[in-house]
Image (cartoon, one colour):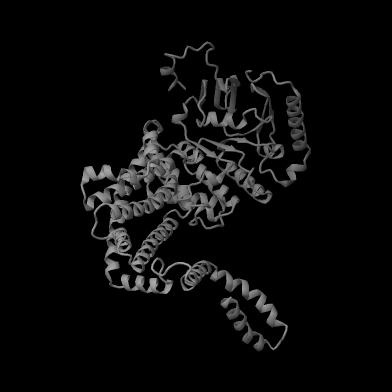
Length: 283
Length: 281
């Protein structure tokens, strides 16, 4: 609502300069949707914060369970600006990054290799699909047995979950490469190796990026879960469960929002990189 | 002539001795057999394709026009038979191929100019040689658009022009064109048709053109290869030797109209004929 008022207000001086009274409504009509269009993405969050605020103020939910959005945001900003939340945030970020890098470095080449040999892929397809469908959190106790209660454990289980996603997507990218491009290379006299490096590898890039993007989200999810339940001293997962135990709800919500922000930012970064590298995607 | 035939004799006992085509033959097809889903598409198919000529392939739906040139170009395996280029096998022959769907034939991760240079790179040509050859092609095609853009940034006609340039870059002995104009608008079709004719007059490259448009097939052709319903045989080979360059005026001249009419008559006789092969029940 506030935005449309601003748009209408800004239209007035133009109309006055035009000295034509009929110009004002016309300008209003054109400008309003544009201004609205730009603001559309923030309407949702603002609405959520307003409802959240109203719910707390009206006392529908006890303040001990839900702090006001303003105080949560203040806790979040204070925490991230050099407070203890920053350390937890960075620790979680690093673990996610490590797990992701391990998954990518192993998963992409292995996936591309498996994808370029359909028989090899078919022979392990069931294993990949099975463990891809198994919730990685179900494997946490198993990883505890192998790696003990350590930092490596959290990274390892997250890397495992992310690896299968990367592997699967890269392999399918190669398997489903456009047949005609392969034929075009073949008819020009390309050898198997040349077809692989000049066509298949490139064709697999886009699905590989889809895989990498899902993998980083998966890595974050597992890292947070692992931080909650595998005796951890830091990280956002630890922070969330710790704050919950002592009913420090403001810190809990701040940590949840920080985890959300991390996941969202990682996703955006990957979309930007993908658009840069796979510039032909969707065209 | 005697290069590659000998090793094959071991396991392929030729029932019929190899009969070479008449003088001036480029591609000889002998005993070509191809089954699809258990019923024959081609059975003991023989054909001679002349050298330095344009052959248009025309026939009823589903008779395997594209399959024929794909088999000759090695894109579809054959069940049995022999295809030789001037007596050589495909492996020893340089060919070019232009696909109908240029979007999925070009490599979108390469700039257009690198797409055109790609077959030259495969041949291991030096950068200087590649640059010279691409410049040559740009000059002979009179390219007015920016080849440093990516294929997806160009119009359909420009992309198809580029993919014809790519196919011609290594100087192929035979150029295959699988409905190269079907995805283009009329203006671009006319333009590329002229370019193809110019290139043909400059180089004399043997060309096989699959077309579903009779006018286009006759317009470019020295020979119109008319096929039957499956199992596919040669219905007729029609010669059309009007002088080149042919122009828009050619389209209204009696010789052209007669060639087109005859092709149409043969085609109609063929589509009315009962199919001799039925799918297995």
